[in-house]
Image (tube, rainbow, N blue to C red; front, side):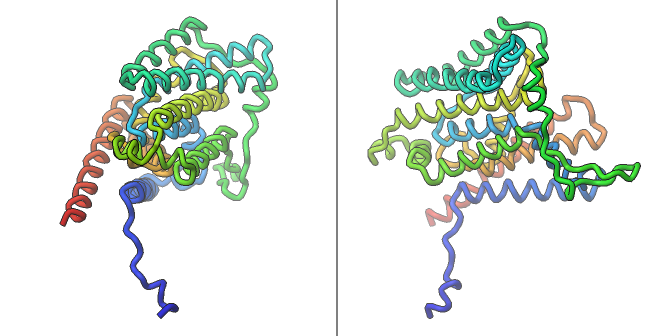
Length: 344
């Protein structure tokens, strides 16, 4: 009988795994449908790479928000912190700054916001929405003080780094003139993938990650298990702030410029990506891999709308809102049915 142990019934997927699987499945269905309906660029690997190139910073910010939301919190300051990081680093580099110091500056800005907001929320027990709302306004104000006008990075070493791309010739495509165009990936995408892997491993294998799930699922139970809830919540906001700083530098690598309106609305897109990826606002359920595919799903539906000829910006907002409502309803139905089965 030991030889047939593989026939034993496997354990059912938990809520996090199920919602992640649904997100990945819907993304694949959407993308395959786009290929069948529109063809064109959707047939090329570069389309996926362009989605990653354009949204590397959003993926990083969404990773931070996923951590916070799994712990039962919220952080709406991430977009403004990203903007402040971009403007600060651009101005520093344009004044002859060192590129390595500019990276430390980006990390320092994100870490400072994470430490202050985490302390206020965790140890002074102020509502997360109020604290991060204040952080958002403060970061936006500081960005405007630094410069009202757009600032383009003129640092030679930085621009040389920004120009570097990874080329994959065998995933390229032939242009109309017959020349082979290799697929290109920006360095920021590699940073985003490293962040996704780090957060995934942290949430799954490190004690702090397991404590975050326990805290978000039921804070009272977490306290009874001996988990330091205040320290765990504090660390979630520190990580969110730090990832926002990293996202700011990646955003700068992609655009090469700073603007007071940089990353405007990024926090809302990050929340939407996390929810679409299977992270519950109530906490305790979520996976950063799902968030990654949630970002891709959000980008895919926007590209489908544009390819359909609906170029007006409000159509993208309408489809994003509809998609978000669909996933929230789907999560509610799926988890509701699972809870009924468990109770029967």
